[in-house]
Image (cartoon, rainbow, N blue to C red; front, side, top):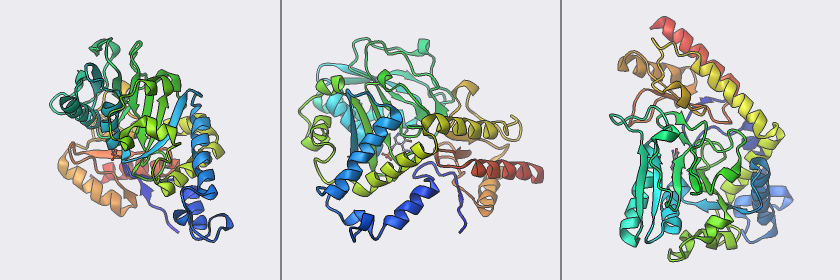
Length: 364
Ligand code: PMP
C-alpha cells in the first residue's frame, strides 16, 4: 500500500492507525453485527462512543469542569452565525479581530445577524493591506471596546498562513476563538477563553462537524430567541443529542483523540509539530523560496510560500503532484504555495517535501 504525502488544507490527512481502525470496525462494530453507521444514536453502543469522545476531549485539552463540550453540525461556518445568534445582545456589540478571510466572514455574518435582530459587530482590528494579511496584530494595535459582549479571534489563518502565538488580552471580555485550523496542535489553557470552536476536518476528523468548548458563565448569558437547533443551551442540555448527531464523525474524532493520547498527548504533538515547521521554514532562503508572512506570525500548521515567478509555481504544483506530494497549491484567493502540516502529517512527508524543494530549486 502506498500512502500519498497529503498537504491538503482540509479535509486533511488523518492518522493511519485511525483509518485502519475504522476499516477494521466498519462492517461489524464491537461484535454487534452491524456498522456503527447503522446503530441508533439512542442506543447504548453509540452512546458509549459519544460519551467517550467528550471525555477524551476533556482529558486531552484539560477542559475545566465549568465548560461544556459540544459536537454540532454545520461545520465552523454555522458557528459564525450561531455565535451572533447566541451572544450578540440586541442592544450591545461585539468585537472582531480580522486577520484573514475566515475572521472576515465571521464578522460579516455577525453584522448581518445584527442588522436583522439587533446588536452591532465591529472590527477591533483589520490586518488586510492590499487584500493580504501578512501578520497578526500586536496588543497595542487593537481597538477593543471594554463593553463588548465578546471578542472574536481566529487563532490560525488557514489561507494566509499566520497564527497567534500569544493570544490578545481582552480583559474581562470573553474571547471566542475559531481554532478550526490549529485546535489540539499544542496544550493551551482553556480558561483564557469563553468559547473555543473548530471545524473538525483539519486536526481532528471528518468535515461537517464542529467541536465547541463553552464556558457555562458565558452560556448563561446566551439569547433565547433563536430557533432551538441554533441555541447552544439546547445542545448542552441534551448532551449534543438534541437531534441525530453526525455519529460517524464523532466516532472518528474519538479515535483521533485516543490516538493522540497513545502518542503522548499534546506536549508530544507540539514537539513534533514544531520540528516539522522548523524543517520547512528553514528551507526558505528569501530568494528562490520566499515566505510572505512576517516571522513572528508564521503558522506552524499552514506554511505558505512563493517562488520567483507564477510560471515556476505552476511547474512546482504539477511536478510535486507527480512526485506524490498532494495539496500544495495555495488558496485560490492568494495564489502561491501552501503546505498544510497538521497533526496527522508525518515528519516523513515534510522531509519528502523538503527533498523535493531542494531538487526542484536545482533543476529550475
Ligand atoms: N475557520 C477557519 C479558520 C477555516 O480554516 C475554515 C475552513 N477552511 C472555516 C472556518 C470554515 O469551516 P467549514 O468549512 O467547516 O464551515
